[in-house]
Amino acid sequence: MSGLGRLPNAAREVAALGQLYGKGSITLTGASASETQWKALAPRYRVIHLATHGNLNSANPLYSYVLLSGGKGEDGLVEAREILDLDLHADLVVLSACETGRGGFRYGEGLVGLSWALMVAGTPASVVSQWKVDSESTTGLMVAFHEELRRNQHSALAGKAEAFRAASLRLLQDAAFRHPYYWAGFVMVGDGF
Image 1 (cartoon, rainbow, N blue to C red):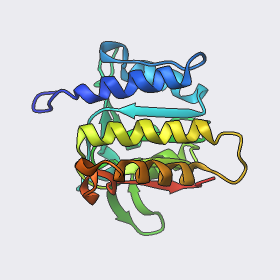
Image 2: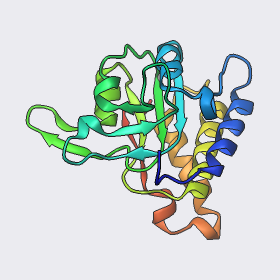
Image 3: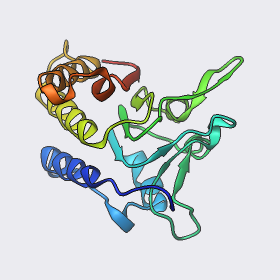
Image 4: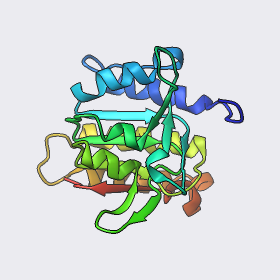
């Protein structure tokens, strides 16, 4: 899409996570990271991570989206309203993109947007952002988060929320990223265990 810059750290993030999860994982980048491909594959995985651009539509939050590549009748915009049609079986979806945790208030529903759509589609937990985030620090936070998840995967006491907290604390150790802008933009929504 015009006006959206490249995210060089996103490719590094995806490569690091592919290496961390190894066999059984799939990484899609560039043209292969299409909306069609994602919709076909997403219901099969327990952990889903998208490192891309996000866009908040504050006037109509169901049209908020994360950007993938288009083709085969798809525009590449995975909108909240489209996520509602999916049957996700993921324990966790991470939207490593700008403003993916924001939305609009709807009586009887609460905050409607991407994280709400993920929950309705069957995902009990998501990691989303509250503002426009820095690409480099986001990559560091996300890689640290998944490392913590993998490290604690057999511990009944250390859930997703604890892994996210530990990753945030790791980022705080780097003087360049101590300001809350770099690490506090992301939140976990839903079941942290």
